[in-house]
Each structure stands twice: as structure tokens, then as C-alpha cells.
Length: 492
Image (cartoon, rainbow, N blue to C red; front, side, top):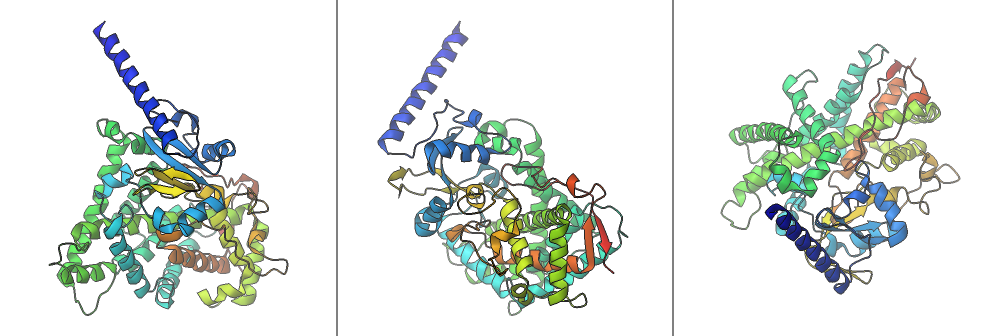
């Protein structure tokens, strides 16, 4: 009897709190949205494997700016190019906040570039952009690193002797080594077992974050912390990755030559030493560990997944692969390695690479933004502490922006004369002040690696083009491509 009374009272309190929230919503003029339930909000209405698809459908009823509840957390969803651009670009200062995503908060303890706000974010972003550019991101020095790594990749694929292989391992090693050169000042052998175990951790982390279970952790972190499960194993594995980073930082401290910084860690340590007596400085050990973790995680798996997806596209559409090879043969030939300067003379290849990013739609809901104070937007009030979801999926697949948004079509980036044309709705790396710091590096890697691969090989699979499905294998936070065994036939 006492239990039933307690449950009844708890239910009444939850219902009253929900009604109070709804009244507050009307008072502050929140954007419209679907009604939800106490505690769980709109979770039952969302597709747990692809919530962005449900959000896109809901926007047809509630408009391009709408409110949903992910559990008890209020979120405002921005749908379509106009709404996303207006928020992230036109009102950039209002939308620079980053939401305290529980998974990332647990992994980094709130330190680092990705999850920070305010002065910490400003100092770390400015420093990271400047340092990465100094070490060649988007410039000649980085181009040479990628070209060198291409030779290792080509040799490994050549060793498959035109037999089926899963390219996941090769792509992860290749892309990760570029990040390792930037951050740690070294590359690792494809046979280094410790290196391979770290790549496995990175892969598992992104897959967990893209699983319904990972999203459940972000919605109910306090409950999940008390329960055993896969999330506890993932966090333990992330600690292994952090131990590797801490060890590398110590090695850098022991061999640091301030006048000759070798990489990102050296530059950070120099700044740390310069500002060690400034109490407000954000250049300290915790931010260094977390920011290196940010760069290593984000720079490895997303780009390697994009490369794997690009290979799936080539196998699925052999006519596209053939046209790219003909263009590359004409402009570059098969003897010298590709340079970024070549891209402007390869409009079809460039269009295919842009379409790979658009169609893959790798982070469909972007990283959530956050209202650091009340925001006035399109006549609505977005209250402080509201998550903001720029639905990049709705931009990259918007029918009024793309002729055939649901089909892979390089013509989206070509004019009637076959020249490359840009589209302002091409926002796979988001936009505004929180846009991906590694965008130019990711685009450079995709071009140089893929052009080198197409010079040397033709890609296929034993099941033929029809056996390849371009829809994602994992989908939620990130759209991850399906894994296939492909065949790389040397070109004669």
C-alpha cells in the first residue's frame, strides 16, 4: 500500500513538473514542437537508430525551428540551410556555445577544445588553428607528409595481389599517421601492434557514440553511471588512449627544445612554460591531454571512414571511377604523385569528392551547440542551457538546394560546361565559429589519397556493383559506411 502511494505521488509530481515546463515554454515563446512525456520527453517518437530522420519529418509539421525533449533535456532543432546559416553564421556570436555532452564530459572531464566554452575555447581554438597551419595544414608541408604516407598505403594495397581485402585497417593506419605526424611528430608502422590497438579503441569509441546505447548514456548519464554495461568498457579503453597520450607528452617534455618545436605537443608545452605564472591561462596539462585526444579521435576515424565510403562509391559506380581515372591520367599521368595544385584542373574529380562528403553526411546532427544565455532567434526565445542541434542532414539533403538530394550525383557540383561550381549548402563540416578546425586537412587527405589510389588501381568487389549498399551501417551521432571486401586491380 505504501509503495503504491509513493509511486502515485511520484507520478503526480512528475506530471506537475511537466505541466510547469509546458507553461514556461509558452511564457518564454519557445519554438513549437511535439508534445512529450514526463521524464522521457520525445524519445519514444524518435527513431533510435536515426533520430535525425524523425526530426526532419517533424519539421514538416512544426517548421524549421522546433523544440524537442531528449529525456529531460530541452533541445532546439534547426532545419534547412536558411535556418542553420542564419544561426551559425549570421548570429554566430549567439551560437558559439558547446553543449556539455555527457559522454565527452566523462572522457575529457570538461577540458580540451571540443567541449569547452568561453575563454578556454577561444584560447585553445586560436592556438590550435595557428599551430596546425604553422605545421602545414592546407599548405606544402602537410602535402608532403600525405604524399609520403600515400606510398606506404599503395605498397600495402599492392601486396594484396588483387585478392579481396577489407580496406578499414589500411585507411585507419594511413589517416591516423597523418594526425600522428602533426601531433606527435612521428608515424607508426602498420605492423605496430600497440598502434593498431589504439586505432581499435578509436573505432570502438565512435561506434559506441553512434549506437542507441551511446545516445542513451548522453540522455540519462546519472542512471547509466550506476549500471554495468558496454559504456563502462568504452571509458576504460579511452583511459588507455589517454595513458598513451600522457606518455608521449612526457617524452616531449624530456626532449623539448623550445627554439625548434617538432609538433603540436611541443608548441603547446612552449606556451605552457611561457604562461605558467598566469592564473587565467588555459595552457596547462589537462587541456593539453584533452585537446590531443580531441584531435586524435576526430582526425582519425572520421576521415578514414570518409575514404572507405569513397571506395564504396567507386565500386558501386564504376562509370564514375572510370571518368575520374581518365581525368587524372590526362592531367597528372600515372608517374608523378598528385599535388593539391592539380585539383583545380580536375573538376569532375573535385565534384565527386564534394559529393562524397555531401552524400555520406557523416555527422547528421553536427556537434550540439548550447545556449550560454537566452537567445532571440526568428521571433522565438531559446532559453539559457538549451541544446541546439543544427541538423546538417537537412542541409545536405534539402530538396530546394540539390537537384537529386537522395542520389549520389557529382553533377551537383558541376555547371553546364563541366566546370566545378560551389554550393553554399555544402556544410558537412558545419559552419560559423564552431566549424571543424580540421576541414582543410580532411579535404586535402581525401583528394591526395584517392587520386593516388586511382592512378594505381581499379577497385571492384566479387559481388559486383549491385552488392554495394551506400546506406550507413551505423547511424545516429555518425553515419559510418558498411564494410566490404574489395579488390584492387593494378592498372596496366
